[in-house]
Image (tube, rainbow, N blue to C red; front, side, top):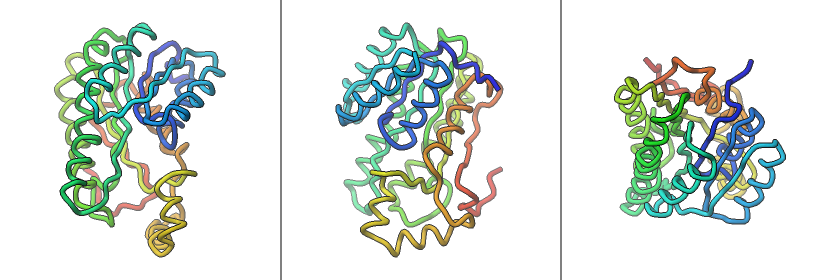
Length: 253
């Protein structure tokens, strides 16, 4: 199936590892031009070098998405270099799972406010696109109570609500907005590898709770993100795609 992504311009925050990196890979393989940002310059540069092997335009910047000027600067520079913006994937999370005021501040500034700023800054470009879409990466922690702290779950839920509200608001402009809620996702250098090595009982419990007996791979989540973002999913907007191996028990209406 042709996803219709060839020649489109995609921006991904947190695009140098995990789900974001796999999204960048798949977009590039489908012929889309890709710009990523992440904090670590070395991994950004390595990712860009890899993406260019697909024969597309690829660029990246070292950005702290909690910094409004830096985030908006990356978006503007990417739009200029690529010739516009068609798709954005706000993907960064503070992963602040503690139960304290600092966690609330980090989750608001990184998960929530970075997403709002990303959408707002990209909107003038999306309005000019023939296939505009926003796909926000949230979490199943936004759907039900789990082991994470209250701030993490609260702002993941807020992202889902924000995506649905923006889908309704932007539908007359033909700009689609969706969210994806991954379950526990394991990859080298990720939070679950850390938990496996340092909190083995929690890791075993997480595996026990999932009826599949395993965690997702970044590739499995990224495929859902890329499809939702693509023109092949042109009438899908305002939805929250759960990719969790039947981990969560709640029914999504």
